[in-house]
Amino acid sequence: MSVLKVIEVLSSSDISWEDATRKGVAKAAKTINHIRSVYVKDHSAAVSGGEITEYRVNLKLTFELE
Image 1 (spheres, one colour):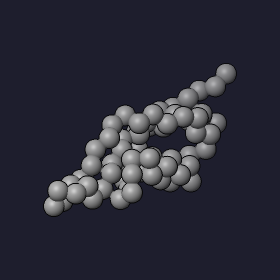
Image 2: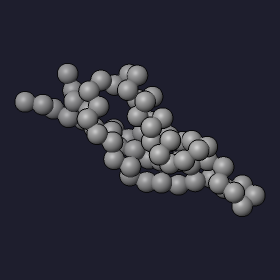
Image 3: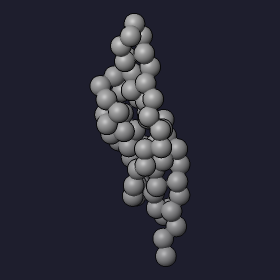
Image 4: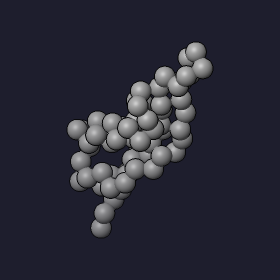
């Protein structure tokens, strides 16, 4: 029987929401084993001078407990 845990992770990128998601998962994977899925809960962006300067995501990561 598997036991899964869900945590929230905030991540950002100056390139795109997809890049922010990739960075968040990659960083979490350095300390969390057995990540099974990622759910993008929310998107947002920082704006300066009428331009997007930072893409932000709120992720829910599901992983299996050992």
